[in-house]
Image 1 (cartoon, helix red, strand yellow):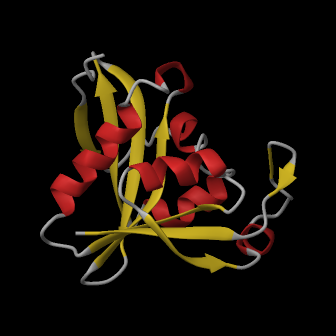
Image 2: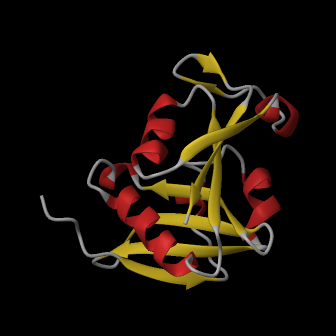
Length: 152
């Protein structure tokens, strides 16, 4: 199957919260990083199919704060294309990309590992300390955040 041709647009307003909320639980959480991140809208034939946000953590590291693909377009290679695009635009300026996801998010962890990321740390009680209500995924309460990194 040939990957669809995507258009990546850096945006500074009119953020697609309907997509951002697929990867983060609340607008409050999203708004904490949105204005200080590079936000890209991903389009396919004029349809908004994805979004990603990257925060410049330091001179060598960029953090992927949010990556989401519309449910209608999932499992079509779009997420992998987004990661490939991120690697192209942030190398060689940065040495690494980091990302955090729920430690019980097996599919998400597998996705990142398949795309060259490696586990390197855990933020204990991240989801308990940073969200007002418990968050559940596949019947499991999210507690710890698994951190992964991609080194150029």
